[in-house]
Image: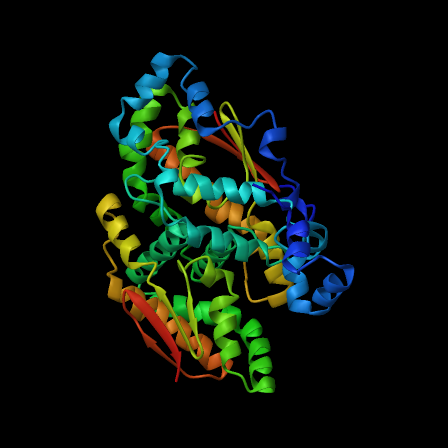
Length: 222
Length: 212
């Protein structure tokens, strides 16, 4: 695992418009589905998946003010380090894993997460994989789900592969240095949380993954 | 219709736009900032200086564009993951220790806040630290209503737990009351105790936390 400490690494993710590998969800789905309209239609013919896909309803939302205020509040906070939209979630994951590790239930904790989200995998992702191929699995567990796009700052998409800056490293290192009350190290997040849950989801969907943890984490289907 | 930019408007609004008038206006600090152009505001505004807003806005867009099976909000994942963790630790009979662990891991931070609260004899500062300025709170609660000695906010867990139970069917160990009794109240009371303040929690659809 890459362990070089670059506190600003999270800020260095390439903006989407300058990154050739970045696609919109719609574009990606087309690619993942083999580009042909027939394949896209096949994806949409999975009713539950299509309904949850891209519904362009954002302009009809009348409750966005709280979300925007939260973004402004978050990004106006730059001390002790610049906060990001995923800060609360990252802290929640770190704290929960720290407790699970102390209690020796980290393996069960990851398995529990996979089991409570199992129905989503069974209902949506597994049939999609069967119909469209294993590449769609990554779409299902990364850019498609709020659990990922509210956690990873920027997901780089290439066929059969996703990369993103590790959201945990900076916050955990700050906490361990300045507060000092966690027993976990960065490697624990990879080994006792991220890898087990991704592999758990992959198992449900009948897919095999290669995970390369690092400051920029890489997950690919094999 | 005549179109004015902000600077021209400021001059006109001040009645003639003489330099002296503008100088007078700029001498009032509060007023001056209201008349400041981007060349003054941008370099000092933390939000406007963030180079990473694009990803935040994309995440926000994706969140609010997800309206099925129910409309997602910015706190979708943090509330869901908190419920998931509580569900797990309740099923392992570890929920009390889980809440205590949160308080214990925050202790060094809370003790620093306690010092400031005591130094200024201002318990309101404790509420500010726990809610208004805490990303774990302002990224979790839809909006926090601030009154002296009191914070109230819509419960982020009630609807989310119903969603999880309905759409996933795998949340079986906890009910809404458990979230109040086994998570929110123990952690807030633990924080308050460490901070040296007393609070009263009134859980409801709109939860209220008051200085006691």
